[in-house]
Amino acid sequence: MRLRTTIAFGIIAFGVSALVALVCFLVTRETLVRQRQEGAERQMFLNARAARSELRTEGALPLDALSRVQTSPDGVALLRIDGRWFASSVGFSGADVPADLMAVAARGSAGHQTVVRNGEPVVVVATPVVDADAVYVELVPMSDVAGTLRRLRQSLAMAVVGAASLGALAGWATSGRLLRPVRRMADAANAIGAGELDQRLEADGDADLEPLVDSFNLMVSELHDRIEREARFASDVSHELRSPLATMAAALSVTRRRVKDEAGLEALSLLEGEVDRFNELVTDLLEISRAEAGVAEVNLELVDPVDFTRRLLESTGRADLPLDANCDPDLRVALDKRRIGQVLTNLLANADNYAGGPTRVTVSDPPGEVRITVDDAGPGIPDHQRSYVFERFARGDDVDAPGTGLGLALVHEHVRLHGGAVNLDDAPGGGARFTIRLPRGEL
Image 1 (tube, rainbow, N blue to C red):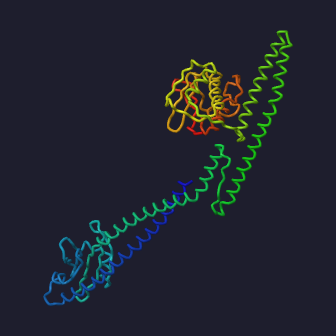
Image 2 (image 1 turned 90 degrees about the vertical axis):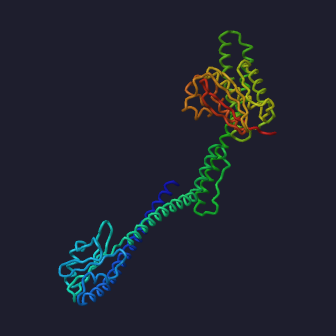
Image 3 (image 1 turned 120 degrees about the vertical axis):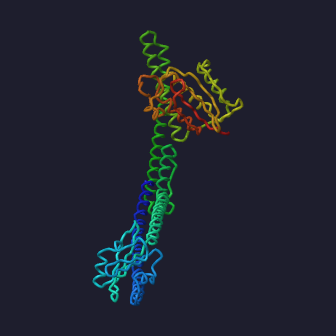
């Protein structure tokens, strides 16, 4: 929109300035040409009197009469007597005088006409010399006028270009000022989309913007309230389900001790597996709901990230998984050990369930942050799935894979609570690469 506004301002400025320049050029040209013609006529009458006076002198020759006249520096005087032409300069003759102009002079009237000679405009003025039965003619070049008009045309063209540029610049500045509230609204909308629901707009005293700002802020407030209600509802439901699940698990344990037949034990095993899966689902939902509701607590400790990752791999039975440490041995980072431990556990489990298992874990310390990378042996995650893999119950195309579909959603929430981010890329050797980026926070 800003580009279109700038172009529109530039086109308008160009059109207006071009029109003004054209009118200015036409008026100036008309004035200069008229002044030159009038000046040529006045000078022609004076020179014609001088020639007539000379011709009245007994024994005077036509060339003597022409020597008495005073033409412009590049001008030429001609005299026609008894059908013969005489010129004050070599190279000119009666052929340079228009026949129409000579017809006017033959009728006893003075006249002028503009012709082009050798590519240059020339004013030809003629008047009859009655007493001498002659016609006096002057050719007055207009090269200086043409040069002036040429320079004027160039100057006006530069002025038009400058005016168009200034118009485009004014359009860019004006549109930037007009679109500043729209940019603020877009920035606020992006922040809200990223989860910052406390964003609000200010009208800055602009009465025209107040209705839009009020509507936007009201929409954000209602959205915030609705999300909080849904988060509290999910948290309350998840919390209320934990007690019945605990009771069911205890009842199944008691029943297992009393059932002796193989078929009953098999049925109990299946039921216990589903109860465990349901309990895991409820626990994950409760964890996510607390994070989204803003009531989750983060207990930070200064931790050696390499040692922390190595211990977690050992506790999950993956002590033989390659661990690369590309960081300072004295590096310490503030993190919640339970939450980041669950993050790594979920990423490793995700690799087991969907990608043939993890292949390598890397810990690095680029400026300002700590990164923990998990590579897997799978085919990678298609581009169309990467936009939603961190959403709740996202399971990709394999709906029969184990798990609740909340593992990566929990990864995203736990890392977000630390002020970090999770990135998904292609691993160098194939498969997917999940990178946890944590800021180097202080206690």
